[in-house]
Image (tube, rainbow, N blue to C red; front, side):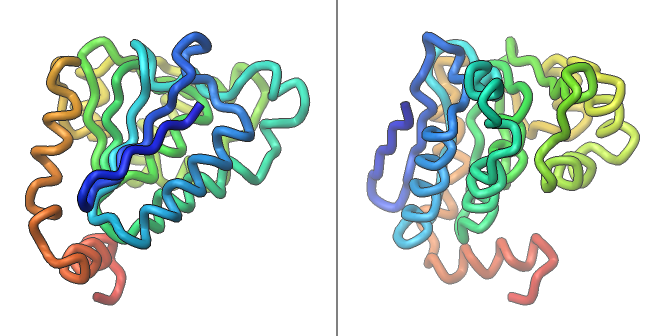
Length: 207
């Protein structure tokens, strides 16, 4: 349910459960964390995308009935992506919902197709977001807009997500991955140590 493609210095991780809108199971989250951690050892660029017309509907509903919402696998997956030393790009092939937000928020850049919607219905469903998600969301869109999504339960469209800086570019589905690769071009041609240093500096860390 997770596909990993390694090509040269780029690792592409694909959520591959389109028949269930790429809803995330604990196994998928564990595989995602492992793939991102493995990629850190060799890749300069990490691309995260999905199959079908939805990036991810969030948590698998059957899994939620069995405690998936409290699993440490959510934080492990987003932490592994955030720790990737190179450039990470979420190429959102469709709607980004619920707990799947964490993986995208952990990426350096987010691009999306025009039909994508964005929502995190934790208030309505009575769940809490994963611990790192609100902070990362607020860092991108600001505290008030983060509260619009988390507390007011607002669903926003791609154009709004772009104006709020939740995503960085909107592009047609047929060029989504090509656009991601174009954004990765400079990082792919650079020394990996240089890529890592620039990322640390941009994150406010010591180079």
